[in-house]
Image (tube, rainbow, N blue to C red; front, side):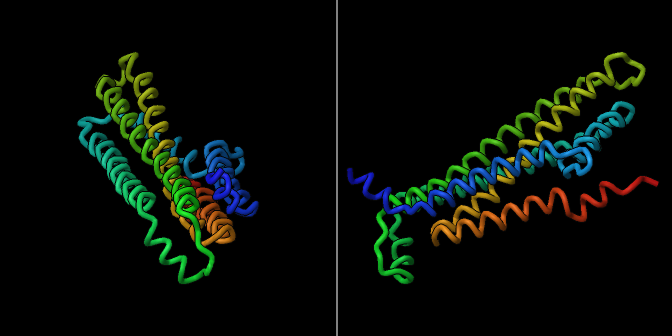
Length: 232
């Protein structure tokens, strides 16, 4: 009963705000990966360039340049995975000791907040960070699959297996990039979820800001305009 009493301290606005950030996270992710044909996202545009990369890769000799690019992509996923792991550790440390948060809350509000409420709010942050960590790890592994397939592509463009294998490598590369982008979005929303510590309205505001940032970078950014510019 004590658990239910504490949960009741979350207002309907709190539940709406928490639902909003989760739905927004899912919706913006789906929109980015399945945009309309008239307004492709940066993720979709880059997917086409990855396919073009693998076509050029078939005839390139030597292929050191390609291996260096792939190695740098894997290093990026490793870096962000490590960062997520450190962040998750920090959040779990706060979940185990919410005293610092209670001290801050006491300065801005006279109403004491039960430990369980702090833990629940931090749990939302941990949820996004954990999802991001898993996406980064999977992206790293799929980039590894891509590297193996690339190594199997014959150096002879006339070989019947060359372009089919390169096409497989391109699709693996794209899937790895998709998961990498999902991990980045998870980190964005984890930062937004921290605002819940300051109340439901703060969470709603931060959710809208994060959605705007993610949307603008995929659909209204300078890199997107560069990608859409006609080659001369």
